[in-house]
View (cartoon, rainbow, N blue to C red):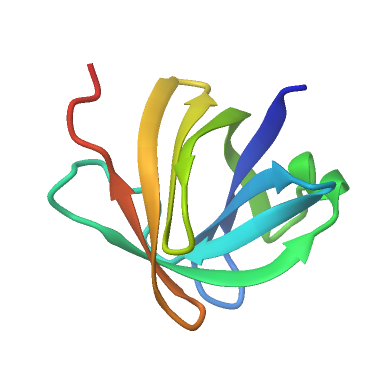
Length: 114
């Protein structure tokens, strides 16, 4: 079974993005204030937020639109790190979410994107 992802452009209460990965019947979610990193030298803060229902994979309203969507695959995982590829509208990109404590994570674009 293919797992879906969605990246929401969320404009309220403050502009940010929400990365949501389908897993175990819910969307695991992180608020990413500055969006996904576009180079491996600049990690982005990602704050874990409550899981969302699967219907949010297509949800849009006046404050939230879909910036990207597609499928994702996991490559490696332990207690502190999740390495995965997003297969979105503009191709595939590999990322790592690195847990730094509490709800705080770093979102890293993996070097060598091919």
